[in-house]
Length: 79
Image (cartoon, rainbow, N blue to C red):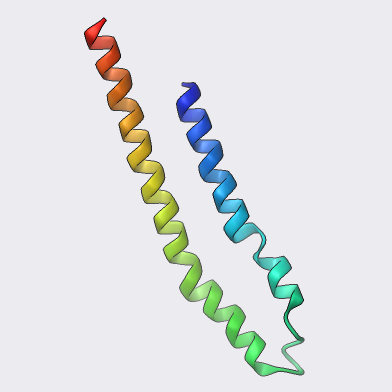
């Protein structure tokens, strides 16, 4: 149980670190009214870069969770 909790917290932490800080990064960009390219950057990051990051984090979490379940099942069967 602790391994699953730790895994979930790590996945959540990575998600927050990658995607939760995007508003701060966007605030550092110039105003879209002054520079239309900054709005394009925001939409490109949100529409293109965010989804692969979510898929990678999700896939990593599922693989690790399945490994934890296999290890727990092996311990209970072996003991």
